[in-house]
Length: 163
Image (cartoon, rainbow, N blue to C red; front, side, top):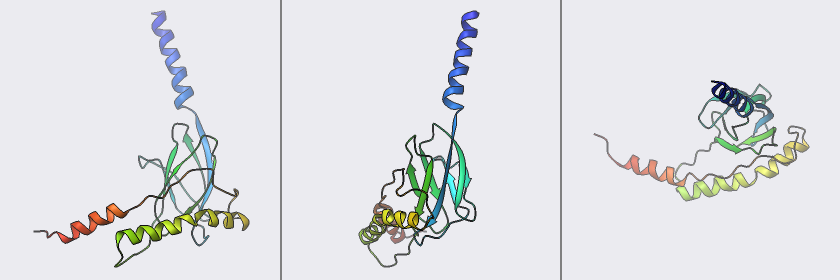
């Protein structure tokens, strides 16, 4: 009986230590034009909304230490997945506009998107110099995600006739 009680108490302590802790993440979300984005959704990868930005694009959220990736989304913008190191508690984020690329090949669309993506570090520095961001460079990792295969699939499905 004593052994069972000790085991339960130890399990409870471990659960509180591992799962009970949260960290505060603050930051700001802006567009490629360095304009604040209000009501941007900040979610976990399983799409649980953790918070939204205010009218100045600023936010403060509490997240469990077990979450190391966030999904940032706003209407008319490309969604961004952010890999956050443990020491990263300030997120200054630039979202790219979701462009309309009519009559272009999937390869060309990805080339244009990647060109814009590569300019994000310059834009981040410009936002810092204007006082919009508090960091010179982001502490998180993000990578370019091609959409070429998705576009090909959409085009292929559009060619098939529906009954």
